[in-house]
Image (cartoon, rainbow, N blue to C red; front, side, top):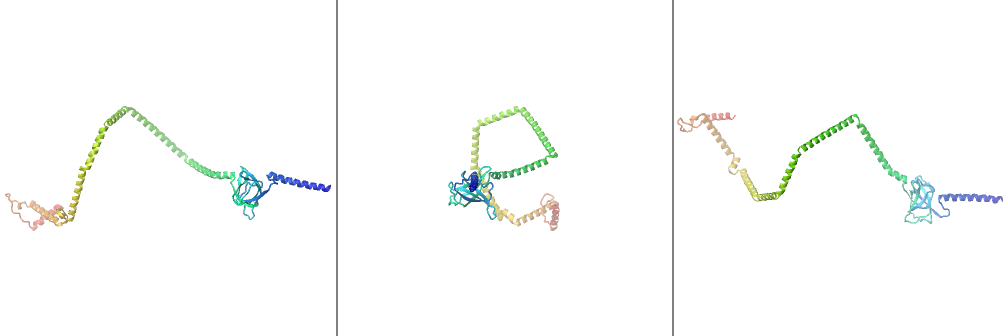
Length: 338
């Protein structure tokens, strides 16, 4: 009886242990009577993944994590072991196992099946990590935070600048500026009043002027046909001048220009009297000598008129000037020129 009692205690303890294991696995969502395959995936960061994290495929739970451990060798990578119900899912070797946010607070694994060769139990699949909701929000908020901090710094600088600008002297200058603006507005208002009074006083004259303008405009409208006829005649006259007399004048000018050019070419070559006068020095020399002799004769006539006129008005033979006379007359002329 004593041995039977001990067996009963042992059986009770084993049964309790079995119930405990079954209960724990049941609470974890594991079915001890269902066949499963274990696979592995390696990650740099497994934040939020625990030994009971679920594994999903298209939102349907197909397994769960059973263990996480650091890889040996000091690489810092973490290997996650998980089991998949063999009957529910067929896995290929290129299947991707991604850590993602199942909800706001829960991280889980999701299967992204590939199309390669089938994987065997114990194979290591491709691991991938999706940013958590908080990380994604943080990634979006960080740039905004940096911009906000920069904006706050700029606003603070602007406020400091305004604070420095708004000293007593600046405030006084601003008050003076507003006073000047008020005075300018008052002057403008006064000018406007004067203009209004002037317009009111001269309204009759302005009305008469406008009526005269209307009369002139109406007259022009009535005589538009005559004006058109006059302009047509002017156009015809201009065309006739352009085609007839103006063309003849232009031809005559061109001919005269050509003749003048021919004359200038002859003069430059030394042809004719003008050409010889410009290119032959002998003619200039002779004219100069004749002019000097004429000056000597006139001077001698002024000094000694009796040589050339008789007492009775008869002409004597013109005397011949001596060398002394010529020299004396030349000196007198030179002194007069000085």
